[in-house]
Length: 309
Image 1 (tube, rainbow, N blue to C red):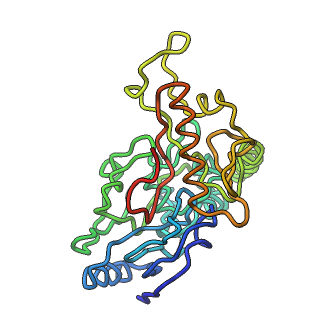
Image 2: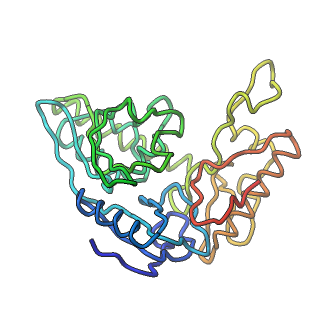
């Protein structure tokens, strides 16, 4: 396992901002992962896991310790079991295309969503009523303390909305197997068209570059002390729309997308601090008008403390 030092991370995340990783590696096999973990332990390095950087904001100061960024790896399938198995670093779009090509359907519901298999399982990627965790059959995970690999089932992950057991940072996904629906040629052709239509729809509604997608998560019901027209509204975009910032509010080279009030887009020359200050301004405006504070869905990496409200 090759461990590199002082590696730039601005080209490894969608915001295109952030500093360097003091140590960096790209494992594929279980042995690679074990060697990387042993190196971090032996050198007293904190570990940060980075997928394709589609849902992260990296500090301008970079990340101390070892950044583990899984390499793409391989995809295989078992037609008789209607399963697809992919290494953690495989991109979600690649596994979707692979499934359609082999007549194994279901994951096309997540078409147009960037990210790796490992990162997507970490956050339990969702689109409308579909959650990636619902398709998971089993996974190989590695214990960060012992380096021991084990196979676990879907229940082990304790999936929730933007949530999984992986948030405890005690285990990392090495490989995942998804249970899908077998299809004939006509059904696969329909799924291919559906994939293209979902992507077209997403590109109309959302920015598709230099963003982390939804920056803030929806509110939990117990965070809402009031009702609007007789019911609690958890959707953070509702409140962001009401404060009139879409396509208008800007700090430095970061701006709220004209397409979606909960999405921040960077322009060339942007810094992570631009994004932080813009996000804080968004939080403060919602707090001032509604008395509630949006909380980040975007993963904040390398910051010594939470830079947001």
